[in-house]
Image (cartoon, rainbow, N blue to C red; front, top):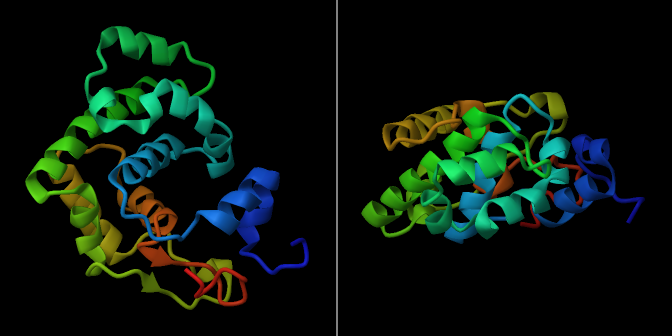
Length: 189
């Protein structure tokens, strides 16, 4: 597999990053728990590299009850203190508070829309957007769609969901396919 052409960023974080690129990034996700996981992780990444958060993914899984939004929505001050002391995650009070509040907002959106997946995928008309970028520099950090979805999420009480974080989320869960055209994953998702 080493002779495969990949998006340039995939080589920046070692084998874990390559595996993430090759198996997950850009694959359409419709499962609410998986969407919650990626929303939580993308928010945790704010100001950091994705490889930093990816390396702590299992720590996040343990600390945040397997990314069960019901469990996380019920976290209290004791849980906050436990999370702040957990070296397996990024120990940032604002990000931890956001994850808990976002779990509550996530459940409210799911209640209102039937599923979070339905709500989120409406932003792209229910179908992945397939882009045709040739160079990494062409890939935007945000789009009008991510700005609109960011506004909707904030309206529903989410935080750490600026348009750049939302676009990274959209890429991660396959709402947009931003694999470069010469990447072996482009168009295969």
